[in-house]
Length: 243
Image 1: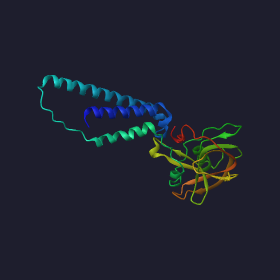
Image 2: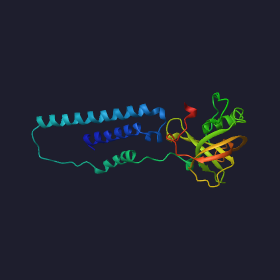
Image 3: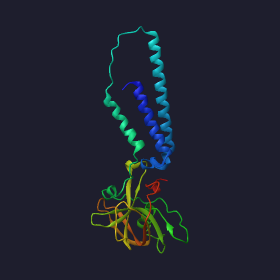
Image 4: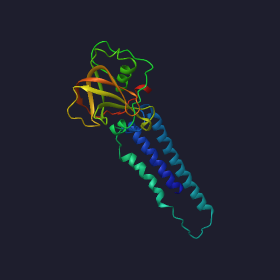
């Protein structure tokens, strides 16, 4: 590719980063805290593309004004290079789905012991993340959960034996390192379970837990008293352990 084509690809890449960063699309790729860096990277790429095109045009004009005319000897650039633009167009036009039950059931739970347990409200239902509930249930033996009404939101995954899990994919940086944290469901489970359905679960703590068949990691359970489908959240990933 010549310099003009390179600057065009750079411009498209920068524009795609700005597009993702100014919408919720970027949340499918990286954690929310990286948005400023994503926008800065897009701006730098666009500025680089414009500067490259300007310098190349200036150099071409200077060369034309100083050199005598020569017979034309065209050297066409390989057109296959323009296939590099296709991933950029896909990024702009197609929003990929967040990782779901397929990844969750093939990856062991990545639950980590919390560094601390923030204080919880004394009354009312506890709205916890899947990661927070699982950490308290396993590593604090449910001491702060016993006797409380708890609400969790996550997507549904079914193990090979049909065991239903409420899952949230937790990440440190980006979707490439996302790993599942699972909470088993027991009690009043909906009769029809569709993997990847997002549910809001209301229930109570139960000491029952099992080992993940993939990596023997601990999976706590929650005693379900009610469940209802909810829309996919704007940010489908959980950053609880990295905030």
